[in-house]
Length: 362
Ligand SMILES: Nc1ncnc2c1ncn2[C@@H]1O[C@H](COP(=O)(O)OP(=O)(O)OP(=O)(O)O)[C@@H](O)[C@H]1O
Image (cartoon, rainbow, N blue to C red; front, top):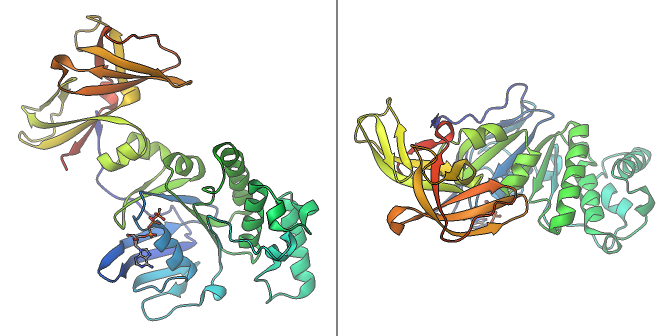
């Protein structure tokens, strides 16, 4: 059984580049960001993930200066960018931002788009930087093309080049791949991550896609209702989620409400040992669908008889919907590959005990 940790670790290991401390932001009566503290180290890619409206974009807008800080502080390399009293204008911040619709200027060429905003640099230096970025992004031969003549992936790289053109200390990417179709998204994502990692710029990516967050981030920050619920490595988020919300964000789970009695928790899928929890504690037991084991009926004494309601072949896995005894509720299992089970078939199901999660009942 996994003990769910309730602490929130949102600090980067060392030498933080971006540090947010106690950021709270309201829109009228609505608290969009609620006491967020977060550090991102140089070379680190941190992904912020959470449902629509949880405050992800507001956080990015506060760092970039598009929104004024009301409470808390934001520093980059120890230099304050914004407090409730003082604020650097967006153009003075060492921050590059890329938006979900790329926001390229249609009347400027690719080179013109990348050069935009570098007016504080001598012309020769600006040209050199644009040429360098065109090469990094494999866009040199499109330098004089206009954005509408480029593919989605190419436009994406122009937008990234523009965000990187002023050599920012921090890159902010807001839903960077949502305008791309599914097939293109994966390859462009890999490309973008490679470029970002090679640049060494501390990067914050906002996404609502947990898989994207896990794939891109050294650390993933989960937000819910304006707060950080957990900030951790993808492995820890999956294996030791702080609560049921985080567990469900990173995969489908079977959930049961129960109460601890005599150091045990009884669920429809068997008993779980919980010697450290006081009797009477209300808990939620969660078991990922891939951690529900199916064996022939009667093959294991600790398994519970179930009846297949239906199954779906998904390519890499087969998802099986099962009725529990009495038909009162259903559970789901996800088995690797193609598994030939038929509706009505009787099997036994058991939770992989070492991976069952127990949370305080919500
Ligand atoms: N300018 C604004 N005025 C009033 N309310 C706003 C404003 N911008 C955002 N909000 C509200 O603040 C909350 C947080 O919004 P935010 O855009 O930061 O969330 P999000 O997590 O980025 O959502 P999404 O994934 O849908 O973009 C939401 O309830 C939103 O409706």
